[in-house]
Image 1 (cartoon, rainbow, N blue to C red):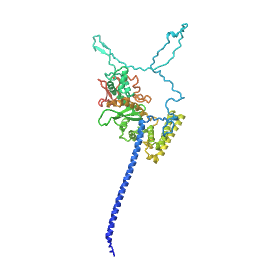
Image 2: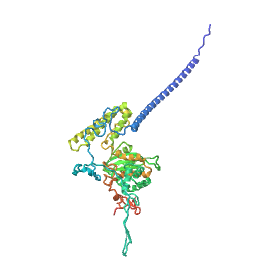
Image 3: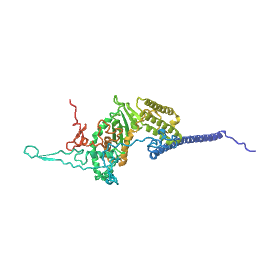
Image 4: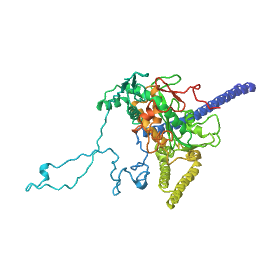
Length: 544
């Protein structure tokens, strides 16, 4: 017989309890590891989503920047593009090409009778003015006329000979007398007022660098060093500065201003300024165009020119100011001040939709086309409204067309602003908030931008400013120069300096001579004749 096993219940239960404890600890460990893995998975999933969003943003940026760099610079409609079903872009009637339309009447020949005219006669040879058989002279019938335009540049050397006289009697007084010196814009300067005006016009209005002006003068027979012309431009600065300040002060009184800014390179190191990028600002009113060169692109520059105290929450009593601009943060900051009404540019609003459609052609292509078409309808309605005279039936109809176009845009804005899909999409700045649409500027949206084109051309031609003096001179010269005859910009349309233009012959001795009136706030040095700012001690005071 086999022995009967003896079971120790306490020992066996303890064994299994120990194993169960180890198993439970292992389970807890595995559950903790599983939770950690799930947390890691959630973090990685969030990171993947974040990276996917960054990739989408970078793809959008690449698409946008590629369009800006390699795309067409014109925003006018043309030939149809993929995703755009409109045959002729945004132009009325689908017209894709610019210029004269077949079958349309022309503009006729230009009238050049205002030019200086020189008549030259071409006669028939004497032998051909009589009959070859009998010798009878032909009868004169008149002339057959045609015209040509000649271009002549004449550089003149002026020699001033001051007449002197000697007394021939014995009476008291000076023994000799001499005629006074000729009036010069710059004391002892080489160049006349007309030359300096033309020089400033060539560089700061036409955008020609100095070395090309030197070449042009050499081609016309005048050899001059570039340093001489640079020195002459510096001498022009104090002559133009009072004009520029007077124009800027007059511009601050306007109730509507168009503002824009562009980068400008100044190759001089100054304290507390990193890099060489400055900013050229422009402020256009109905009578003035003011350019300001500054190191900053902040709202303080615009506030200083527009006479706005940023420490206050509202403009002074009775003043309201409308600013037409893009969405730059400086203008958004000023728009928060009570009394400042922003007028956002429709051209910039349209660009946001175009960029969103280009970045997401499959998802937002049709949406972009629909919005650009609505904006095109609004532009056409505005053009039709501007072409009619107020008070006429045509004007009333155009007014209704304009209001319907804007109401259609506002209705779609309200409808789509609540669309969850659009809210979650990256629209590239094409915000559907009312702040981006209310009071948008349509008719004169690009006035300020257009005023900067000449300055941009100048910056490209002579690579910004060589130094700080040249940069400041650029702002003053552009302000004092006539940049846009049609828009009455600069000094031409201003009530301060009406008629003072760089390309007018009458801008000669009267305004540039040492005998010209001294502007308020300035004094003239009696020895050098240079204009200087008046010190507080020498400034005139009111009589008691």
